Length: 130
Image 1 (cartoon, one colour):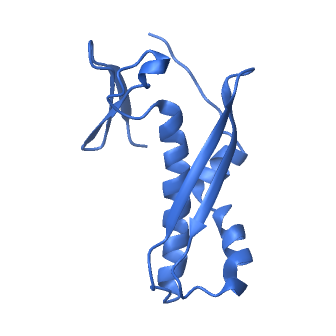
Image 2: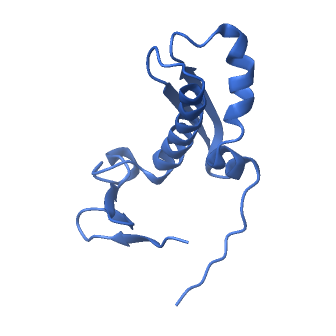
C-alpha cells in the first residue's frame, strides 16, 4: 500500500504527497479557500473520470479502435444533508471508429473500473488519531 500524506501548508492550503508527486488541494474562494488547486470533492470526481477513461481507452486500444481519443466529461451534484456527492454524470466520447453496436458494452465496462466499484461498494475507513 502506498502512503499518501495530506498536510496543511500555512498560508497556501493543503499539499498531497503520493509517490514522487505533490499536488495542491484547496477549495475555491466561495468555500473559504484560495483556489490554489482542486478541492477534495473535485479530486474524487476527477479520479472517477480518469479511471473510467483509462478503462475505456485500454478496451479501445486492445481492439484497434484508434480514430480519435477517449474523452470523459464529468459533472457532479452535491447534497447538503448529509454533505456528500449525490450524483455523477459521465459523458464518454469514443474514437470515431467504435461502432454504435459497442456502446452498451462500453457502458457495462465502465462499472468495472476500480474507482467506480469503490464508489458502489464503499470501503471500511479506519481512523487513528495520535
